[in-house]
Image (cartoon, rainbow, N blue to C red; front, side, top):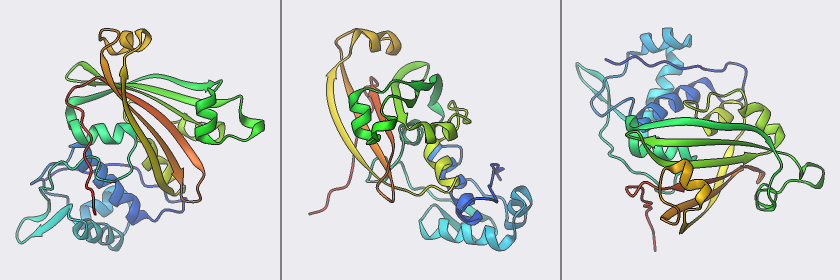
Length: 249
């Protein structure tokens, strides 16, 4: 039986059972919880997170409906074998996506975070108003897979959201679930992908030769009210990175 730990926020809009659900899903997606692992019982989870067993039951019920777990007589609640299903229309940030793909092979290195002068592209993607166009918050991270550079991510947001994100440990904390736990409703994203030659500047960070082909993923993430909250650009050098999604006619 595994131990589940995390932090629930009692003073935000998002219900406690939804926060617990998201903690468990993140651990499944990241590979911390694997198929066949047994979750702690309702009483143990209630004591760990200082919540009621009814709240725990709501979380587990939703996980069962979504296929993340199943109940087996005499064993308890078991993590299901869902396989890896990256990029099937689910909105994720770059780190969420790569943790789901690479699990414990991935190491995140925080490179920079702070106020910068945004490019015109950043201003346009974030739809910054005239009085806020000269300052934005940027954070960047290098992703290593088996001690080799896999990707580098540059993320931009407004100063307002930057003041919230600045408190995070970007080596391990996931940005979108944190914003949701703070009461912000993440709605949808728009994404563009293309291949280009790696610049000399990025090749130094990614430890590759200048000019090699790299996959660039640009993603704008919006709140449910249509406000752009994050624009991120991720450059992938790992040849195993691939994008898959289900198409319907």
